[in-house]
Length: 231
Image (cartoon, rainbow, N blue to C red; front, side, top):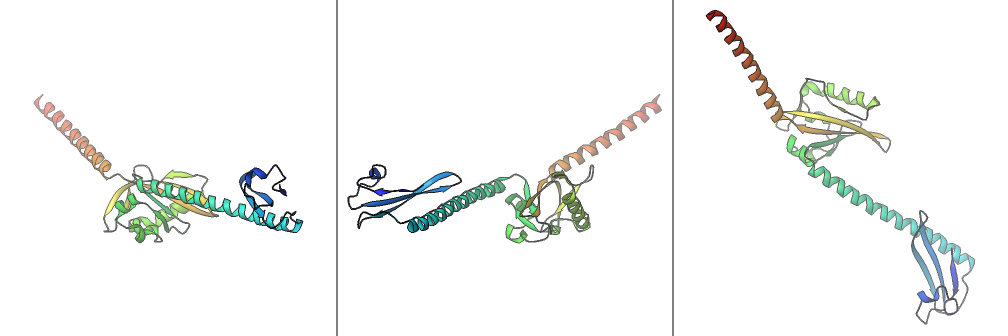
């Protein structure tokens, strides 16, 4: 669509050009994704004239490039906003969130993960995941992640039933953790994301309940023996 004419005589563009010195005008729409995002106006103040086809073609090319540039800038801004929201969610998450690449190197390490393991994000990014695992579990964990990557499952809980998982802090101490892992493809490469929860308090409570249960069973046995002897 090209609007072309003498401003003073053409009733269509005239209302948009109140300046008396504008004698001719060319208006070309900026369209992207079938949506009008603006209009490029070229004004002529020297004399009334028609714009030649060559100039219109060049302006059309420029207009298309400008529309593409504006759309790219908008998409980039949207991506930056989305990235900012994503980072805010990561920071506010109650659980540790850690992402690793296909080589099992850390690419995402949120604030809760920093608190849980004692590493700053700058220390963790780019490092192998093994730094967060007990030495005797590192190789098994690596194979489990590789197996998960080749499976049709999109997510799963790490470990097996009744088997406790541990993470290794920066100071070398171990912490009881519960881990869920998911995967997705990004730019043709696999990205794994683990949600890590500190379950130290839960484990302590479970151990306490187990001790009390055993103690109760022992006392019940003693009471039964006393009753038999008394009888």
